Image (cartoon, rainbow, N blue to C red):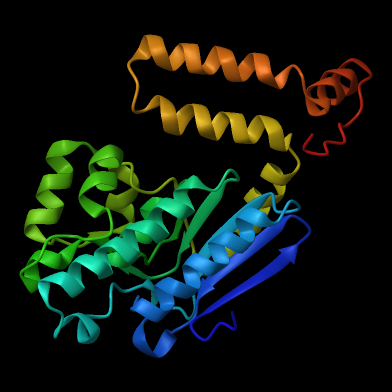
Length: 261
C-alpha cells in the first residue's frame, strides 16, 4: 500500500516511527487513514527487526484531533457501526503489537486521537498537549474504545466525568490523573521518545514481549491467575538464548548482546 495519510519509517535500527500525516485536517482519522494505519501496524508486526514503535502526528497543533466529523455527518447507523468496528480493529491491532508502543502527543489528542494514544502502551506528551473525549457534544459516545481504555487508565469515576462532560484535559492534569507518563517541552518530545526507544531496544526482546503480555493479559485476570501467568512466562524465558546471554553477560560484567531468540 502506498500511504497518502501516514508515514511509516525506520528512524534508527529497531526503532519505527508512525506519523499520522494530515496536518491540514489536524490529522483527523477518516476511513482511508484507518486503513493505512491498519496496514502499517501489520507491517510492523511482521518486521522481526522492529523493537519499538513511536506513534505521533504531523505538525505542532495536533497529535490527532479526532475522527473526521465531515465524513461521519452523513453516516447511517449501519455505516457508523462499520466505521466504529474499523477503528476498534486498528486500536486492538496497535495494542496487540508484541513490542512497546509509545505515543508522542504533541498537541490536541481529542476523540479518536485520545483513543489512538490510549491504545499505545504509554504516553509521552508535550506541555501543550490537550486530551479529551468530546463526542457527547456531537450527540454520540466514543466509538474507538475510549470508554473502556480511559476507565482502565484513570478509574471509573474520572472516566465517566470526562466522557459525559466532554471536558478537555490539559497536559498537567493528564499527568496527574495517570493518562500521561511524562511531560516535556514540545521541542524535546521526539528526542525523549527516541531516547526511551533506544533504552527499550537495548533490552532482551523476549523478556519485553513477556512483560507486555503479562501486564496486558493479567489485567483481565484475578491476582492468583495473573501470578500463574507470570510464572509460566518466567519459566518459558529460561529456555531462550536471550536469558542465557543476559545472565552470562551479568556474571562476566559486560553488556549483553540480545538477539530476540
